[in-house]
Every structure is written in C-alpha cells, then in structure tokens.
Image (cartoon, rainbow, N blue to C red):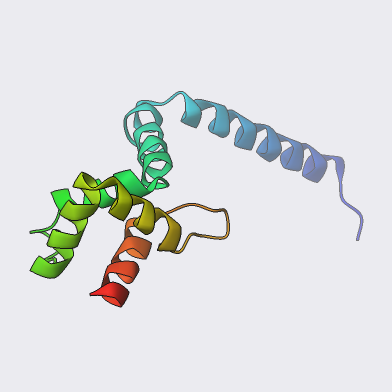
Amino acid sequence: MKTTNKAKATQGASKASKTNKKNTFETSEYFKKVILPNRVLKQQTEKIGYSIKILLQNAEAIQLESEFIKLLNKANKDEAIYKQFAENVKKSKAGKYSPFKVLQYLYKIA
C-alpha cells in the first residue's frame, strides 16, 4: 500500500509535535516543582545514610518495630555499625542503596 503525500505530511507533523511537547514539558512548572525534586530525592536515597534517615523520620508512619528503630539509631551514632550496614546492605544492580534494602537487612539481623 502506497502512502500519499497527505499521509506523509501528517506523520511529519505528529513527529514535530512530539518534540515540541517534550521541550515544553521540561520547562513546565510541574517539571520544576515535582520531577526535579523527585530526581534529587532518588539520588539522595541511593546513599546508605539518607536511606537510614528516611526510615527514622517515617518510623511512625510505616510502623517500624522498636528493634529496627534501635538498630537504625545505633547506626547513626556509631561509625563501626554504620560501616557494617554499608558493607552488608544489599545494593541494586547499579550499586545503589534503598530504604527497602535497609529494611531487608534489619529483618535479617534482628
């Protein structure tokens, strides 16, 4: 089936509109106020210390057990325990930490 010139023009127009949408999205207020801060949070939680801090700040909301809270507080105060966490908490394929992986490690050692 042959495509007509009219069909080709329509395809070209849709490609152009997609690139324009992408450019306007990256400059939109939603992008600046939601997407960019989320990127920063994701980058910060890739570190073990920030993952521990997030869990401690949200301990009540996620109903952390008192054993877990004690271990997290010890890790924040004692550098040897902090290093032990950093060595033993599993990382993602990209080598990054997450609060979920810290929770898994807490369950394993508690």
